Length: 247
Image (cartoon, rainbow, N blue to C red; front, side, top):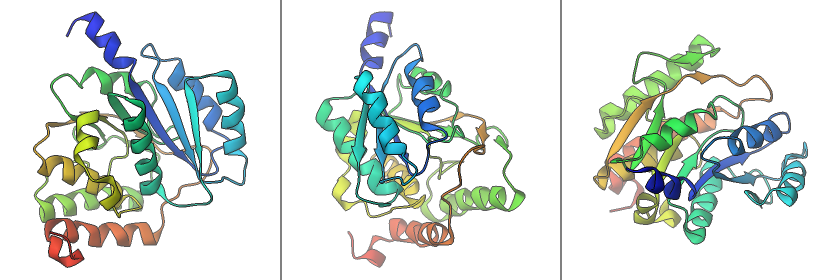
């Protein structure tokens, strides 16, 4: 791919970042992303954060047209936030669509690496486990849960991913267009599994790229027991659609 083609594709990149109470991180994250050489656009999807995250993004977007904001009425969940972001990306004509967290557990500099791997791939996943275990500052219990979830998913679904629950990735537009977004019902970390599974079943080319995942320093984790339970049952519904009444 020549430099002209590279520049054209990077100009059509959207980074979607769901937020809830990320006032400690959101301004720094926006700055880190917009300062990248590829200069992607950013969409913040905020779930009416009581700490003022949405208001801060409004201030930033008023001065920077590369920053957009979708404000929602309440804490509606990770999956629905990304669905709204995907629909926005398709409507606005973006070619590459990136998911990432706001808490710096995903290094913004790795966006450049994701984009560099998009040639010849349809989905590039930032993987914590493709080259050993690259996780910093997680409690052992949380780490074992994450590794176990990916192994469990791989065994039941047959999907050959080392990090099935990764939330840091880049889709080509055609992948998102191929998925009926209104039929995606997962709303926690199982949302990531469901999107990966549908991409894989449609025979798109997937690559896992090694990243180092560093647990958040500021703010609080959104992981809860309900999210874990949803993921446990979702993999069975994906493998055996009749369990959820789907074909």
